[in-house]
Length: 464
Image 1 (cartoon, rainbow, N blue to C red):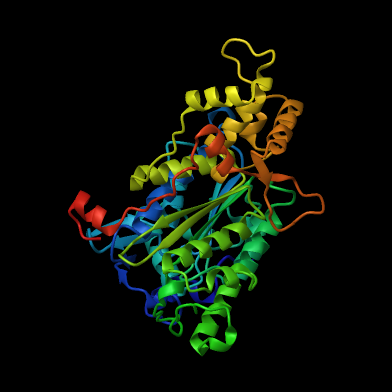
Image 2: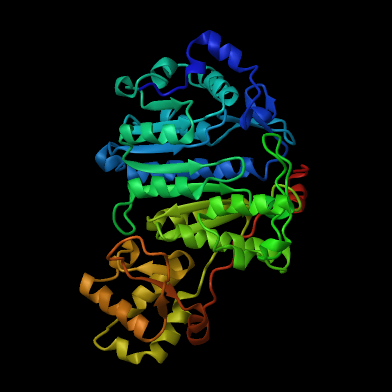
């Protein structure tokens, strides 16, 4: 099986592709081979975070220096674009998500032979430009081999000019190992696709080795938007009563059903609250569905322009990955970090629960406290389970199991309700932040705050 569609075989076909205008990406604007963007606060900021995370993630999952970076890994970009972005406001061309994956693979101080980069781009105009970018930036990468039969590929880079379902069939044959799947569609990825990839990769509760990163155009669902490749997206209605909807509103609600995989989101989102509250409910409904597959789901907000709100959503079963991504986001945006007071909190815990101190001497701490602090400090949104790596490090399996039971009994932890995926699901918990605040005077982590266009212009003197 070749990894490209029939229209992109050979140089003549590639030249002709540049004139094709018939699908999603080809309706976008280009600056040379780069996708044209108006400002740096959307895709520009998003790709900077992705670049740092790709490198962090690969250095760990590859086995690191101790294993000579030899563990099989893959970055799978399901909407690769051209590999470059042109930021109109700053006049600079930067790498897009797929470009950063290629840069890690092809220009690295580390041995990356075991890293596979799979770039899927259905649009032929974008796919042609992606090839141009590769020829110019990474001329040693054999394009013919990258687009040829999978079984003959020895370079570890796979270019797929296929639709998403065809590409998934090919990806399974690559045996990608520990993998990141990045979804960056023009409006949304169908839940059916999310489920299909998750089911093929996550075989038991919260299995590590697979991460999703999903980009979502959140505010478009509430403001409407004109897309050149489809009829106008009409804003969602403000009532769940179907009889009051216009035809356009009904079509948008149907599209949202495809995003969520059901219609149960409607009661929480289709209401007469202000737009900010509805957008928050929209993201929370999506997050809850992703939590059925992943231990943690971290939505990171972006405000490319005044009135717009987009989210980059990291889905991971890996403890350190979520925390470091939150840290990267705070570095780039100035969003406040979470720094609760360990010493003061332990003092209050000790006074409230002296029974846990029996036999504790010197600087040692009871396992109940260590597990609780680990959840407060390092478990995203206070979500946890007995298999969290950070919790397992706080004592023996028996000790940490007893500590979790103790926390449940005293209502510091409550059951986390998610959609069942397995016959024997792993019990999961949610920190009771109200009790933590009242007993220990520890507030929940602050919401991630995006950098706004006004703040960016003040700090950089550039209109976003």
